[in-house]
Length: 497
Image (tube, rainbow, N blue to C red):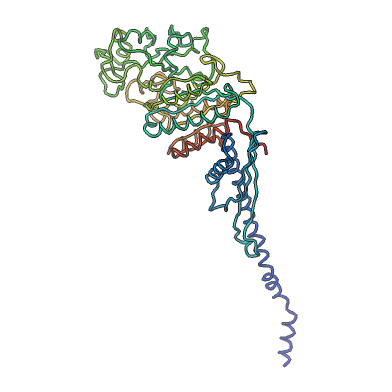
């Protein structure tokens, strides 16, 4: 009996079970608090994505100033649907659009309704977050140059999609302009080279006397003025393409000067390559097959009254339509877009370099306003569907002829025949060209169109003025969306709240 009484006394005094009891009682609120933090974090993520989706919707509505309220709401919902991941972050509800024609503003409001995971245990089944975006069209003028890939891989439906999207951008910008002269657009189609147009034949900045040290560098100092060689040949004229100046002027805005021959541009002329090696791609004249490659390459007499006997010729890799300088004419730029074709290989840095020159106030194109004109937005859209290419060859010349001549003479900064090395050098020139554009204050947008290479996508994203101005377009609809988003930004619709 004594033992039983002692056991009951000890049991009554024992407090160790309180810990378990207290823990059990506090388990539910602790769980709700910790799990609720996850629910609230998810709601904040939803609000961030909601704000981005509403911003996109407001920009899209804003570039269509004359639409009805119903159409505006449809456009807004379409853009919200495209920019909001519904299954992950709940549903967007209560979307409203209002347009104020007096202040020229568009306001889009909406809510994101997010289902909870833990808070439902205490009866909170949903968290709702709100957002409102207002955009307003600015009054500044715009100068835009489109630098567009016209290479062979853009053939078929891709070039048609590009034409349609570029024309859509042109149409939106002109419709949004308050005055006809507020928008000026230029076009630079690029492939392996860029075409300035045959109307510039022998103008002073195109080195008519062959004074640039790189003009005819392949001839070893012989009489190889490219203009004269075209004149000597029968039935062969300059098609309008130009070669790259010496680095860094290959991509920059250094104005040409008669007092400094190295600053002059010069016509693209791909020389006849030796006859006796099948690896030489551009063999179009007979050179007698005597002497070494240098002697046959530098045999100037073969161009006299010469007629091309085989494919290619001095205009090999001159495949694009000419540059269209900045113009206020919508018809002019749309007609130029319609004429774009698809042929040749890819040299993006030359496209960007000429894009800078088209939007510049200095020679060779002078249509651009001064760089410090605060009333003008200068912008560039760069599109490509592939990687930079310069074909290396197992010949003494080490490459096909291109905008940088033959690799053997080092104008690209290497004498390698390696495909990857040549591509890497072109990539570095592209980075330099993009940096130059941004240094000058040009707002750079970049687009990759059905590009599989992650390195190319990264290169183009880095080229843009900021990552949000890069668009990866895996389909024709995505390409159209990209141009529409750029149109919204280029009308200077700025977020005012």
